[in-house]
Image (tube, rainbow, N blue to C red; front, side, top):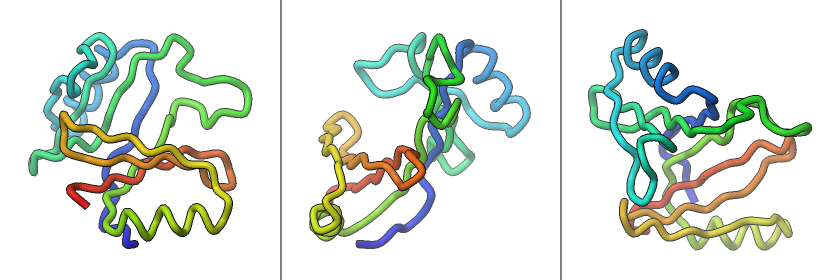
Length: 127
């Protein structure tokens, strides 16, 4: 299993429109809709000049999160290869994880938490 790159950061926000404008204006990112079935009122993705969605904004009434949460940072995502090897490693550690097949974007997502409680999203494209 190999991490190839940081894929994106997912940020909770109570005001998705102004957050999207901030990132677009300050970092020259392009605002686009997230994949279906999510709506623009729920999710906005910000793309870099290479066409990569590097920031995901998600509508959340309490952007600070619940006690014990990681605050506005919902999760950090990595682009990976070696899905089966990763699943074997997680099983060996007795780690909790969830696998989600995202057919709309052609990815398998594996979610787990680090020792600090930070949600990690591990993305596998056709792997």
